[in-house]
Length: 217
Ligand code: B16
Ligand code: MG
Image (cartoon, rainbow, N blue to C red):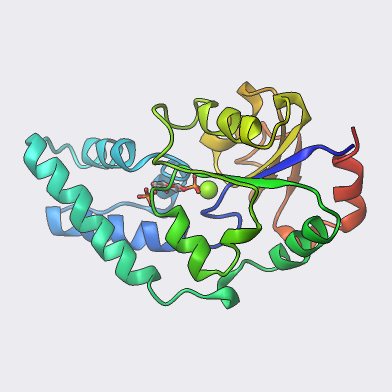
């Protein structure tokens, strides 16, 4: 028996974080202010609605609900045009090796992402069919750091939360995994993701032996 694995998408499987940043930054610039890379850290893993609320707060802007909806939709169009040409070469380094190992060894894995664009992105990367379950921003009512997205993923994997291991690049996502009672693995800056149970800079640092160890029940 093995544990189940849950992958975050943006910043873990593929580097869409930089495209989210560019698209939000362009929107902010059009509104007359800027957002920094440091501020962008706080947007990782955060839903579209909460990201926009946060950004408008930074710029001291209030907008009508109509304008709010327009800003979200034009940001998303801009974002989609930036990721339109993504393909299997855009998998982050080391990800393919891990997915291949899991697939070959029949270890089930799921996606647990805040993104409403997750399915088209996975399709573009040509890995959509390899996931036993895909839970994304369209399936949840509560955004990370609420554990809902990971708890639904565990259910779909037929696993207890404590038997799940989550790979996350965001502070909100690590908190969500911890609150779900799962093992959290932070991918990225250890100083930022200090609440994670294990930390790696990226997947090239993770050896199959480590995977074998953490999936043991
Ligand atoms: P969308 P993840 C998150 O995806 C991103 O990290 C976050 O920056 C983004 O705002 C959120 O998805 C919503 O994305 O606008 O595509 O619905 O990291 O949870 O996979
Ligand atoms: Mg992420």
